[in-house]
Length: 193
Image (cartoon, rainbow, N blue to C red; front, top):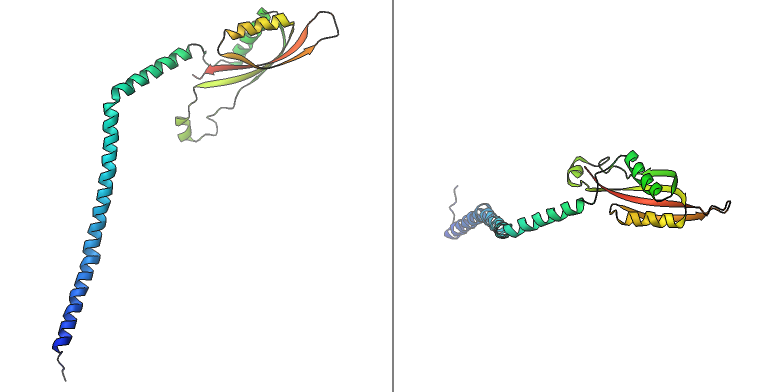
C-alpha cells in the first residue's frame, strides 16, 4: 500500500530541501568567495603600502644618492689614515722602528691577531658580515727612560691607526743607568683588503 504524503509533509520536505540548498550554497559558494575576497583586499592593501614606500623612495632618490655619495666620500677620507692589513713582520718592523727612533730598546714583541671571523661562519653570514677593519693587539717590552717614552707617545699621537691601550712600568734598580722596563700594549687598526 502506497501512502501519499500530506500537503503539510510536502511543504516541510520542500522547506527542508530549500534550507539544505541554501546551506550548501552558503557553505560551498558564498563563504569561499567571501574568504578569497577578504584575502584579496588584504593583499591589495599590502601592495598599496609597498607602492607608497617605493614611490616615496623614488621621490627621495636624489637625496638618497647624495647621502650615499657623501657617506662614501667620508669613508674614503677616513680610510686614508689607515693602512691595509699587514703581515706580522711588517707590524714588527713598524713598532720596532718607532721604539728605536725614540731611544727605546725592544726586548720582546708578541702579536695577537683576532680570530678570523669567516672561519666557522655560515655561508650566508660571510656575505653579510664582511668586516672593514681589523684591530691587532701587540704586546711589547722595551727598556729606556721616561723622556724616550714620552717621545714615543708623541710620535704615536700623530698616527691615527696606532694607539697604546695599556702600559706598565718597572724601575731597574740594579744599575745606575736610569733605565726602566716598560710593557706597552699597542692596538693597530688596519683596513681589510
